Length: 116
Image 1 (cartoon, rainbow, N blue to C red):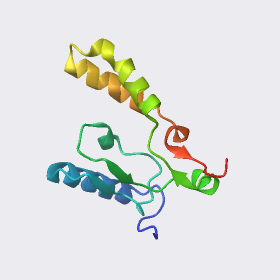
Image 2: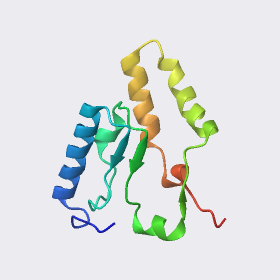
Image 3: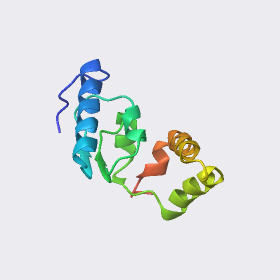
Image 4: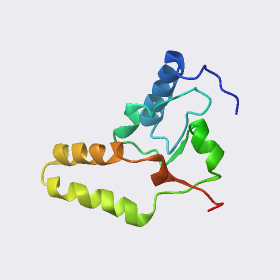
């Protein structure tokens, strides 16, 4: 897919945010923010939504070294959840704990290289 916006452009980030808001408003389960020249993952993706499938361009270095995007392993998923359990009695605190855990995810947590 061709890039519609220059890499790192404010317009591309604004378009991503518009698409995220629309997807959340409509309860969409898929979101495509490819071709927007993003150099960061928009913060708006860290808030709760029904989005299950995200299409996003990978940084060039990651794309060159990987061939498959795999779902997060169940072990990693439950590890993240386990780190938020201590805050379960306070939904706001648990949400913030989850956001903190998600911010720590690396590309390696979601990208697998089928050549390895």
